[in-house]
Image (tube, rainbow, N blue to C red; front, side, top):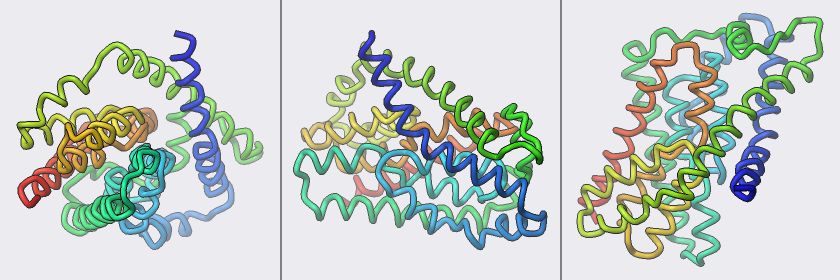
Length: 282
């Protein structure tokens, strides 16, 4: 149990720099930037789905955490958030490298995920911008109230950012302990390995496993793929759906909690669609 708690602790610590720098940036914007400048940022001149897809490909789930916070404040679009979530690879790349997977497989998988993420993000912003999640507005001050940071224009932005980081890190640590416990005593790999003769069904199952907000699904799915007990299409679907703890941060910080389920549904459907396409083509 001690090892389980320590693993959860170190996993959470790895996210602290991302959290702190994100909250520091948000505090700086709130205190120093005029409203019209915020609107320029919100017009997505800086936050495009393509950029989100590229950043999401960086190993670990740090940028999914950043994306969740920026979306909760209204600084990026739904398309950019989905692009980040879809392209996030978490532990997939380190596992592939450690197991000696070919560079062509790794690069090809990243390009496939990143390209698909960018296309889906652009599509969402172009065609579904007014239909989905209309309530999301640019409001950093409201974000601060929701996360109880007690910040004030005359107070240090470092203090406010530190409080944000502590609160979210504590929440993530508790969730990590729970998930560590579940993954230690429940073995979804047994169920998934039995689905190797059912490639279509395995895509749906892998996406469900990938949806669990933790780094463990990406580790599990990648190892099963390398052991030839999971199809490439199922790996694609599972890792597309796995945005690390980004979805947890989104639930913690978003004003309208029901929107998290809408975002989760979009993420799952898009992940399954590409997974099924890969299975049918290959």
